Image (cartoon, rainbow, N blue to C red):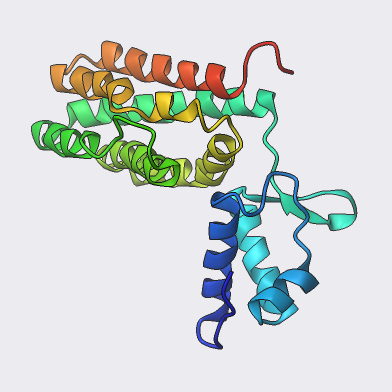
Length: 215
């Protein structure tokens, strides 16, 4: 991570730390020492402490024994719970989107986002951003700001889960053909079917990132 200048230090420290976690430079379970991080970034321990506190709120960092901060580890049980909650949130999103007067316009917007999803697993980070961008957009198009806030609160854990999964398998869940049925169901306007498609999508992701034989 590059050394930082004195402007907007907390925000820049936060971005640098978040990027280091999401790119895999810091892995699940790694200890984040205030002293070491502050020295590396060229900022005060207080600045690092504020950034780490924000990352705790995002779910990327967690406090362990004696308050020691580590990159969050999401257990298989938590992964399955995470995707069940996502199924509920995004199921509500498709229901509200279908009921919206902007239904047709939203479908067109989703089809444009769908085109950005990968056919091939060439760039894991870009594919991850396209995948999460699609699901966030789905929530935003619902017009429900509380729903969007709830999804964003989970985003850190979603990223940690995917980044710590088997990257060779992840593109199968990020692929365009895995998401096209969601858009098609929304376009058809059948709420129960669309919600079922979202639930199946999330169940498949849970099976991939947390196989049933894991605790």
